[in-house]
Image (cartoon, rainbow, N blue to C red; front, side):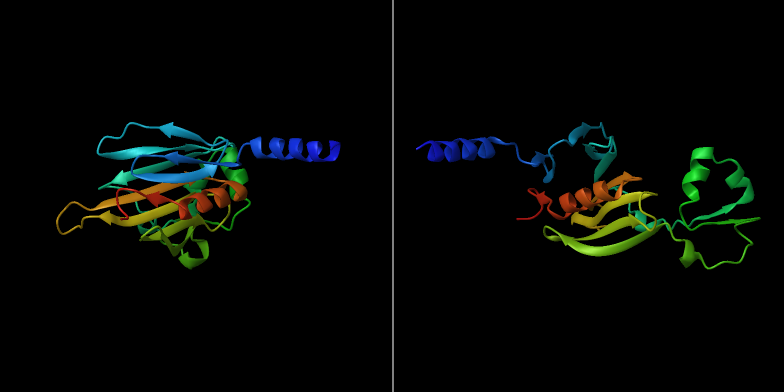
Length: 193
């Protein structure tokens, strides 16, 4: 009898524990994130903007609208002029030591293979009913991580295309993994029917 009662009490305790994850409803979409991440409200001017704050105090911002930014169009490289590098803070210089970079006299006249110093890599994947571009830094923790969806509805032709971007900067490897897991599981209530 005592054994059965002990097992029943243990089962009740385990069933009452909180889930490690929670679902946040942003209206147009839902996202399942770690329990300790918090919703972050931002007032947008021409789009729906909001985000999350992680347990490491990283801010993850989304932009849902006509002018959402696509990082894949901004090819950035880790090549700096000596003048630009001299203006970096000691913290920036220290962080830069951990990544493949190049310092040149003049970044416009110097000869180098830009592909060797790309800041980001991009992959395509599907999220809900959309094709999405996942963006991550080539050097973990040094740059933006996130997603860009070109068209949730509408088109450029009719000037009513709605896009989505959702990014965080300088994320740890574990935070980036949790963020990408959440992004891949997004559900779009207003767009995927």
